[in-house]
Structure formats: C-alpha cells, structure tokens
Amino acid sequence: MAATDTKRTGLHNQKRGVCVFVSEVLASAAADGIATVSDGSTVCTLPDKSAIISVKLLVQTASASSDTLDVSYNGTVVANELTADATANDFYSGTVLAAGAYSATGGDIVVLDGSQPVDANFRGRLVVEYVELDKVTGEYTA
Image (cartoon, rainbow, N blue to C red; front, side, top):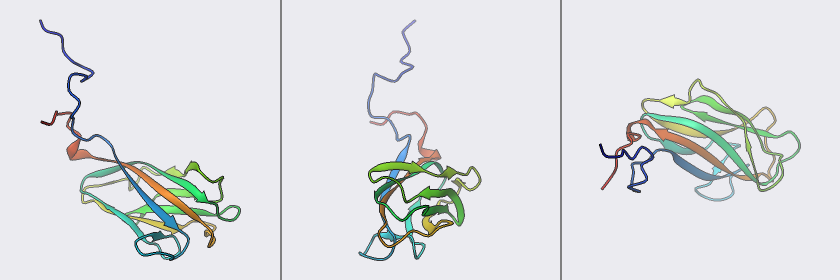
C-alpha cells in the first residue's frame, strides 16, 4: 500500500484557508479612502459565508490614555475595546465575540469609537483574519 501524504507536502498550490485584510485607520478624516473611527467608516466588506477568527490593531501613533475602538461586523460588535493608547508598533487585540462573527451573506466591517473615543492623533492598522468557509475544502488547485 502506498504512503498517504497526510501533511500535504507533495503539492504547494492549495486552496485558500485563511484570509487576512489590513487597512489603515485614522481618528478623523485626513485622506480619501482611509477609514476613520469618528464617523464609523466601513473598512471592508467580507464575502458570503465568512467567519472572523481574529481582529487586531497595530498602533502606529498612540491615542490618549484609555482610548479604545470597537469593530463591528454587520452591525454587531465583534471586537470590543481595542486599545488605541498602546505603545507604537505593537499589536493589540480586543475581545472577539462569538456572536456575530459569522455571516452567511457577508457584510461590512466598521470601526467605531469605544467607551473612550480616540483622539485626533491616533493612527493605526486594523488586521482582520477570517475564513471563507466555502473555500476551505482542502482540495489542491492546478
């Protein structure tokens, strides 16, 4: 009997498993196409049958002490109280809530002020890790 390649090392071109979306986020409008926390901007729209695994914030320019932001998916907060006052160039994650982290029809990722709104100096990058469930088949692609 031939050996089975259970680790799939034989081929490298597999269908996508995990997707990552990264977007710059500012406190208020400063440039076209950049999401802003103050007006609840849509950062991106995830495709149908997507499940969010994690949401992280890479702080580039810190906000004032105790400032936070929230991230919603289809109107439901899925990442609560991401720290915006953290050390620059560090990743911070809020609590990813199970409720609302999946949508059969896809939907908008929106950044919002948290319990303490971010100040005008804030600048960061939002990193959303998600899975498109219909594309995680384990099949090989040509």
